[in-house]
Image 1 (cartoon, helix red, strand yellow):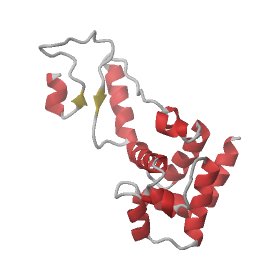
Image 2 (tube, one colour):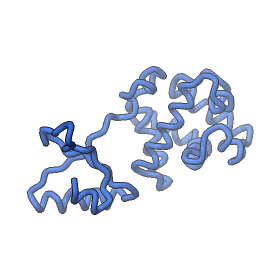
Image 3 (tube, helix red, strand yellow):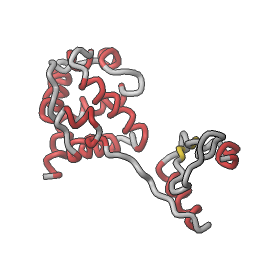
Image 4 (tube, helix red, strand yellow):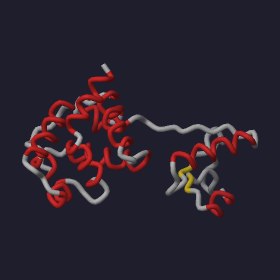
Length: 171
């Protein structure tokens, strides 16, 4: 814990006066690093005999996404489109999480801006296309989403046709 604290690595408190971890997993989060830096850390730790891995629950396996009927191919398509525009890793994940949370709220500004009742990937891409055809501005996207989501959502709106093609390629 002390080493992580000194390095600014966020971690679960594994050992406190009220509890003690089995030490099976040591969960950490290193803020503001790139995918390449994360990979380098994994290699350097392996060189020291420390096995590491990246554990996460895929977005479509989370309750909010399941309720919307999304699957791994839908989210992988969105991730691919964002990655092609240099939005990767946690930035893409945060943006998509915020988008899905807003879509899960039937009264959200995003649902309204997209035409309402967005439940499936097809609904989503159709809504993106409607917004693109209507010439939605960045300010309107910001009002419908939030600061952390605006760029990613703008990319998906502009690339709605490409997004559909990427999804079709997964089948």
